[in-house]
Length: 445
Picture 1 (cartoon, rainbow, N blue to C red):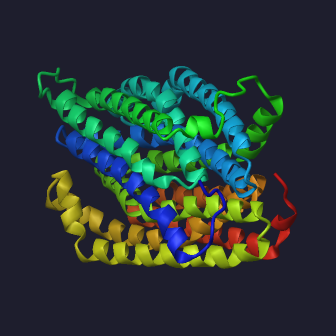
Picture 2: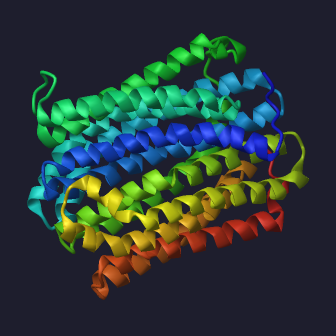
């Protein structure tokens, strides 16, 4: 297996497109989940927005671990050190399980009090808390799953990603339909049925990826079980490198939860509309995130090979491709937005309220296609503390903006969603100037 990457368009697309497909499947899964819940009523669709963003906080912590481990594995791949890849992966699994246990404890101890004190609707608060106490048990499966994804991306075997996500999506859709409405001989659990379906689906995806890794012999090639002694240096490296990313992602999505709480103060319809916007971000943003993940791995791999002068041209190449894909999706979304919104079955008034927000969000997707590539380039250089600083500054600007527009001035949610413009412009500006400064060249991991 060739561990050292090249930087041409063919290599970029060869890595990014399988990642895109792997991301597309769970997004379709998530949207289907919301469509099923919308069949229960507008309140359930609104509640799904809160539960989805809350679980997303912990899911992106897994993504922080994933991106950190992915960059470390890609760096060792660029240095042609296969046994070091196995040691990183083994210790990364234990770090992931520790974070999952912490997430479960927080959900049972702190989350109920916070949600009850911040949500204005008692019915929504109760529904959300009951759901999350079930849903959070999917974290261990999710975190182990993303660790295996980090391995496959880091060693340029992205074509295998789709099998895990495809199996997860099929199980989730079938069980959603069965457990929410009581089909296939299953009990009609209603709103909480989606939580049980998602947990079983995540466990299924993990099992499939585990089988693939063993079937292809990756566990032998990278010596996963050759040396299982605890190595404090490996543990420290993973924590030092990944922790800023974990905090970065958690703070980012926590600010989105804050945004959704302010949206909830504008009523159930505003919250339901905003939940569909999150679905749009998830579905139409997959190419941007896939190219961002590709940037992280390829930049780290190229630096590991000592080819520092190729980094900025590589980033520009990936950013141009990412923007091109997003422009096609932008056109598609703006030509027929009603066709997407009709899936939720909420009627013409709902669609009329959502259309101006779609216009705002679609422009934000174009900004994200470039901004997230440059931010992940910073991750690939090894300077994850810089990632955190960029995120914290951006979140302060973002939070001030959403508070002023949604709470202080009480403007329509269209103005609130323009916060995504503020977010991505700020993010891109700082990441761009850091990479151009060349300070990352001195970083060694």
